[in-house]
Amino acid sequence: MQRVTEPELMEDPEQSEAYAAADFAEAHSRIVETFGQCFPGEEVTGPVLDLGCGPGDIGFRFAARYPGCSVTGVDGSRAMIRLANARRAREPLTADRVHFIEGLLPGTAIPAGPFAVIISNSLLHHLHEPRVLWETVLHHASPGTKIYVVDLFRPATQADAEKLVHRYASGEPEVLCRDFYNSLCAAFEPAEVEAQLAAAGLAGLSVDVISDRHLAVHGVLGG
Ligand SMILES: C[S@@+](CC[C@H](N)C(=O)[O-])C[C@H]1O[C@@H](n2cnc3c(N)ncnc32)[C@H](O)[C@@H]1O
Image (cartoon, rainbow, N blue to C red; front, side, top):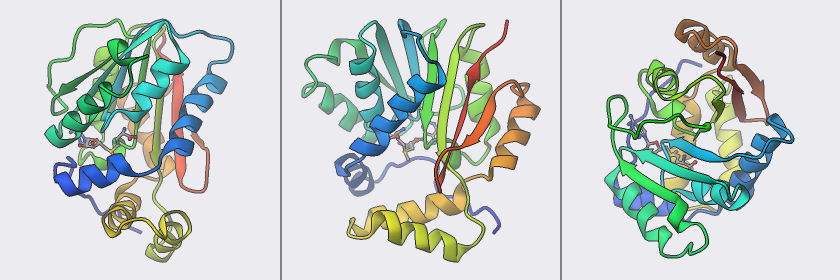
């Protein structure tokens, strides 16, 4: 099916609160775990950048798993950044190493790196111009920066998208089901992501399909 874009920012308070309240524990801890499998035996120390951080769940999990790192999360949605900052009060063990910036990509001011790691989950499909993500990665990465980007990929048909919503979100609030369906329709196919990487000069990164609905882009920026 053709890609159907959705609004970039998740600014509606009802939408962002439903997203923050959803149980992503398994999915997000799997992201931290699969990051570790992609870069085996390597402890992460130093600054980590989380692009499109939303309410910050992955950043807190990352900081808990890697006590030598500090995480900066960036998101253009004021509602999401509010929720992320509110969460800091509930995360006493990691809060001093996790910070958030409200800012629209591209162009928002992000502290200078070098970043040891750049992560991003489920931002790419929101972007009307996907090169915004890859140019931001290039701008803030240095040789040796580990890149780990996870997103949905677009199913072949609308019926396949509906089946995925039914399989993974039945019983969730209506707003989450609607967002999930729209996100599947807005996502990119793996071959499209490979073409984006080639166009951005990031062909050294690998694209793997990691589930029936997710892909991961990973690798280390060369010198
Ligand atoms: C589906 S959420 C994912 C949040 C988080 N990464 C997670 O996995 O829980 C996508 C986030 O990207 C943000 N976003 C979308 N387009 C953006 C842009 N151009 N600049 C900054 N943030 C953006 C949205 O506001 C939203 O919070």
